[in-house]
Length: 302
Image 1 (cartoon, rainbow, N blue to C red):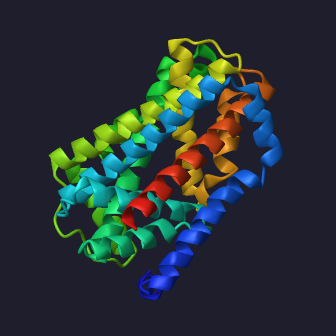
Image 2: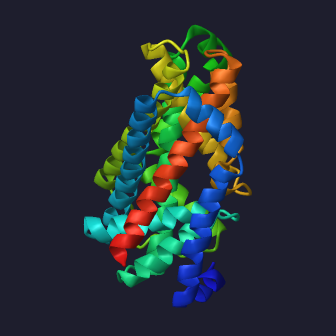
């Protein structure tokens, strides 16, 4: 990581990173253009627009969760610069390797006089909060979802107490300390506070609800029933698919993995073709949301 950070301090390399990240995000869409067209043509324009606006809100909520951690660890950055730092760094997830968003966050944060070590730690903590809250949402969604989903995935409810415990600051700080030691990284400058973890978790939970709403709009437009059980299933399915896709670091932005998990969970609730279309439309809209916000942040920063 230190070698990567040293390389990326040159201004021309920063510009090259931004161009490559934008190209990778565009390629994620262009590489499946025929499928994208099929998904787009099957959706009403108003539904697609509403789902896109919800996707934008989802990305901004994840940014708010990350900023809550950043503030708690000692860097109270104003909203504008913080948004630029987060939204630009997120474009790095479309590059293979799984570390480029961390590298980008560290370099942009250095321009804001945030220690690189802290920027990397904050991003890692925010991701851990997203993973834990995502799994928590997925487990609760099993309880609230359709009966056949409860019978198939009911064992996931056994993880609920563990997931809640992981968000308690004493446990979370010890877990982070253990992970940092294993990675041979310096420890946290000071432990996370209960208020900071609560704020980050609240924003992360809101983000998962927005992601679920985004997916619900798509599946109901393609034939699923607009019920509370369907909403719970959509929210839990997206949270689970995102988490699994993130953990498979060899695939940039979880491309393919997220779609496979979403398709598997949704297959019994909507027709096979509709499930595929909803999954593809979700990927396209989320990618475009990342691109739009990243470009807006780059333009504002310039």
